[in-house]
Image 1: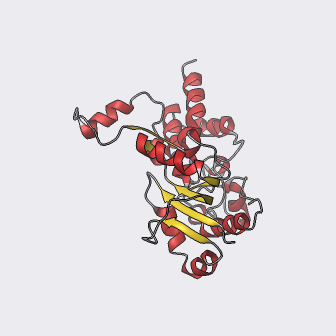
Image 2: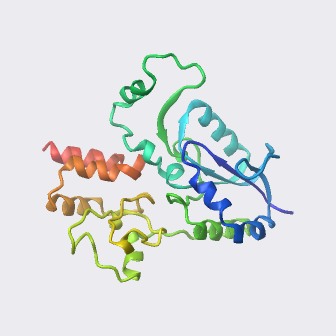
Length: 259
């Protein structure tokens, strides 16, 4: 029996779903192996039913989205966030926890009473439900997605990259922009998977694939401080794609700055 798959999107640019759709050479043969019961960007006959796997893009920013996410989780065996927004919160959560969310909210909506839904600071999926795997990227790599997809539908555990972009950069024999050119590169603390595409063109990594596990944040901060960046500049850079994962880093840097 074919596995039932759902692909959903919340707050984001839809780039991850588009990456899947635009992989024409893989799309038909891969999806012929499963039953796609819900994928609004690709089909109109979507169903609400029990799922074997749900792939979900985007962060959660409203009570309605939160309720919808929990509902999907309750009828899904395996739930996989796809993209940096779903995994970490994305750009929309770069100011998460700074205490000024309502000030930003009022700049957009003023004092108008919003009755359609209740919004809050953008958060990744794992803030509300259990997630089984995480495929980061801004957008995701089709290679990583279809590799994980193949393993999951065949009941194998996908092995995703757990090392930093620096590794991919070294594979390409690039000159280190951080230590040799003193440029603010986030390669050492960013999860690999992008293929070091920016670094191949001598552009410092901005961290769009989210933080790598066990990143040496303290040493990276010291390097940036030696380069002349202030703590606030470092915090801004780390926060851009770090989302929820960058909160402890921000607290640590602010604490050290106030000593």
